[in-house]
Amino acid sequence: MRTAVVHAAAGSLLLTTLAVAPTGSATAAPGAAPTAATPAPDAPGAAELRGTAVAAARAAAEGIGFGACPDAQDLPGTIECGTVTVPLDYAHPHGRQIGLAVSRVRATGKDPDDGSREVPRQGALVHNPGGPGADGTYFPLIGLLPRWKRIAGAYDLVGYAPRGVGRSAPLSCEDPEKSVQGPTQAPAHPSEAYKRERVAQARAYARGCAERAGDALRHYHSLNNARDLDVLRAALKEPRLTFMGASYGTYFGALYATMFPSHVRRMVFDSAVHPDPERIWYRNNLDQSAAFEDRWADFRAWAARHHDVYGLGDTPAEVLRSYEKVSARLAREPAGGKVGPGQLQSAFLQTGYYDDHWPHRAHALSAYLKGDPGPLTEQAEPQPGAAAETENARAVYVAVECNDAPWPTDWAVWDRDNTRLARRAPFETWANVWTNLPCAFWPAPRQQPPDVRAGAGELPPTLILAAERDAATPYAGALELHRRLAGSALVTERGTGTHGVAGGPNACVNGHLEAYLLTGRVPGRRASCAPRPEPEPWAEPEPQAEPEPRPAA
Image (cartoon, rainbow, N blue to C red; front, side, top):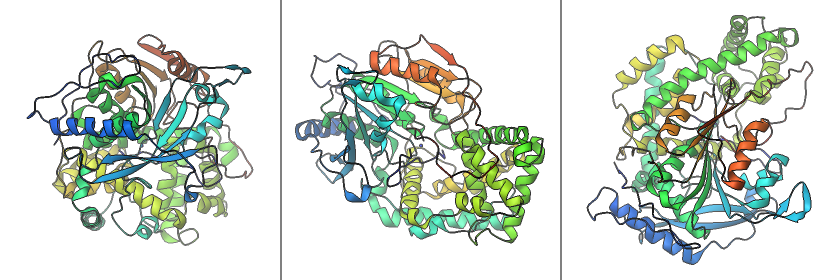
């Protein structure tokens, strides 16, 4: 599924074939590493499970030599960096190894409301921001924010770059410069000629992944991400894992809970992917495209309510016409020579992820229609400086999703399903297709997604956070994960759709998050929180600051 990759720029706090035999759930002695049930030698995934145990034992003995971070990451001195070594192929744990970049800020041990009062350390809180393809090494910076200081007092905040990402055995499938080319088109109802062109590009991208990665390509998938997480747990010398995953991070976090239930201490799932194996990943992407149409309507309704500020129209339909007018003009004459309809659509897709973006995007559209293309160019133009990072994120995203599950291999199926969907959800449908289409031509073996679930007593209580109108991970996914994980609690932010609600402006959500992480308390089976306030419009140009950092993607 397409999820926003949230990262930190230098000097700033900017924050998505193997079945697995579940391990046993026996309780380990205090301070000891839990042990997994031993599967039959010929059980599906048995070799990988044994290999994970070997790698975890090795990592527990070696630990992580934390020290200064590489200069290239531009991280402040308060963050320590290190590397944990994992097998490329868990069926052969003594074979080729890869290093995963890890970052940490130690628990402050202080109560933010009473600096003289010490709080006990509760271990490491490991975070994944989603993607697939997001780099989580910037996560420890979140502890500088007031809303996170209680959690930062009790936990070492640990981020890492999953396999394939950043400095963790990075993947790339094409020349990075191609990932930031502009201008491009974005037809909501593409012609047959345009479709043929995009099919050819998808074939070439899949071929490029295979040529650049070789046989290693098959080992970048969600099951290995879950196994890597257990090795990281062991390297941090944590008997049980405290984990917080956002977006895609909820999916392999749920896989982890299914594979290693006795290794779980506490788990937070923020903006949950629908875990039904039949939906991984083709059907989930169809559902996502439909949901983005609703969020696109939310933005247009908000802009219409503030017609006096932006002049884009006093109905959602009129705001849409303003957007389409801009898109048509950009098709004829790209802004700054680089911003065409494709860049416009990509920039406005962010309004579906975060309503923090609504005032900035509305102002950019308004200014363009009034003759000033500057704000739109600034917000939408390709960033050559981020080309390598952009391509790396896309390569990991494609590799993981293509490897994870079967996909239709007949273009006619994609064409049929998405042509139907685009009639009622034109905003994101075809852009989503072009992102995922390499999976139709994928050269590596496909897996069958495991059945995520945990029965009564198999897991400690877990916490699921969700927004009712989330488009990137529609709310049905949170309901389904809640159903599948016995003992889980679901906290819903009503009536809003920001993707990733932990640590945002909703004090109710944050209260449940703090209570869970600090005391293990969950609010029964379900709780709801009133919606966060809508963003305030502004009439005059303001500095284009990014939204307040949050650990979700």
